[in-house]
Length: 148
Image 1: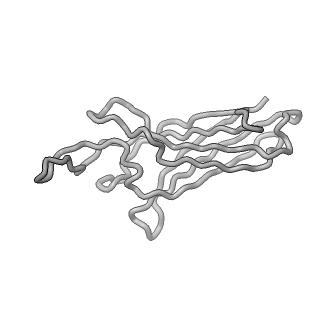
Image 2: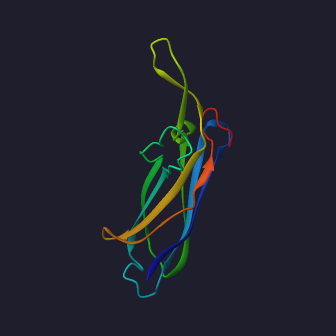
Image 3: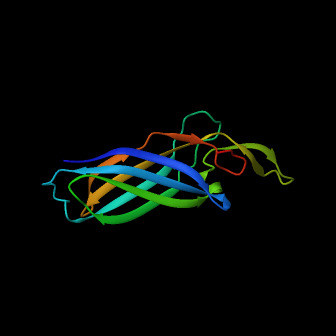
């Protein structure tokens, strides 16, 4: 048996860099002692993406805010893993509310609705997924006009 438990996503400021945000994804990977992945390198794929909560007139961006690919040697039992990425806070403006237009008629993003994000984690052995899980939705407003 292989399972991913307790996936948590956190978004926070980066000291000294007001335009950046740190995304941290933590989870526990559980492997039975006789699982084929034990003692072998596995791939860890992490993706942080927007979730449409249907609370804004504009749909969220479809591109993930963060995608990572890493590897580690799997161990039996429950092991805690964490992935961090630093992004510009504009990357977290997944839902925009267009309130104005410039002189050419182009829409100007001057405000935003709350952003809703989830982290998805998958672990694969030899290209075959052995476990996957998704975090709870994290809601905040991290963009240019946001307050987190």
